[in-house]
Amino acid sequence: MTKPKVFITRNIFPEAIEEIKKVAEVDLWTDDMPPSREILLERSKGVDGILCLLTDRIDGEFMDIAGPQLKVISQIAVGYNNIDIEQASKRGIPVGYTPDVLTHATADFAFTLLMSAARLVIPGHIASHDGSWKTWHPLHFLGQDIYGATIGIVGMGRIGFEMAKRSTGFDMEILYYDVNRREDLEQKLKMKHVGLDELLDQSDFVSIHVDLNPSTKHMFSSDQFRKMKNSSVIINAARGPVIDHMALYSALKDKEIAAAGLDVTDPEPIPNDHPLLTLDNCLIVPHIASATVETRRAMSNLAATNLINGLTGVSLSTCVNPEVDN
Ligand code: DGY
Image (cartoon, protein in one colour):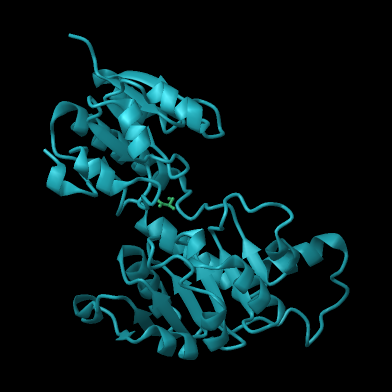
């Protein structure tokens, strides 16, 4: 019997690829850079499944060109704003994604960004290397207090809730904004559901954990920064376009807010002439919040399982559109 064909758009953990090879003929894109649109479309023609990344645009055109035999799309990420879910559902294609397995690593890292941005870790590191650290000075490298501060969590999903849990270790007061009030979670942790404006007004730290969709694009722009405290720090480990980057630049430059810690940017990578890169109160790292060995291994394995399940007619372990799943 001929095996189904799959295209895997980047190297993942080898054991995950080996599992897929047991049931499918694998075409693996081994370059570190994503396949171009042309290559993605060409290599996906006639495949039964695709294992893709957030850098691959999987839209209706892709699905048409791949062909009607396409049975499953398996994304190795919890976010799936690169995939047109409506188009996939219309064609009856289940879309897998990788929630849960990356929750702790991502929340750990969001807290790392919070602490690093608040306490000027990177400027301190640079000063100790470039000779500008001349002496201990009472007024140098003054950051923001974390212990006992107020954190405003925007988006109380899995990662937002883990961020809240970490905040309790620092006796922080926890406010959150979410379109859905989470009384179930409020029973587990002392935290208060507030409107976005109240959260911005009262928080010392604002940490973004919403997914990217038309209603969250540029959710943070000049108006929102104006409502924040001058001493506040904003953290984004969700998706870059949730923040209007030029508005953030002005807010940081004009000291409307004290600092930002960004795991994600818009676009990615951030161009090296982007004005945000000229600011020493804007910490930027290359979308690495889930990048630990064990988390990326678990993401690889889960994405492989979803792919294999879709190919073999079994329900996906974690499916974005279960209404069209087996
Ligand atoms: C995701 O999973 O959506 C992250 O952005 C990468 O881990």
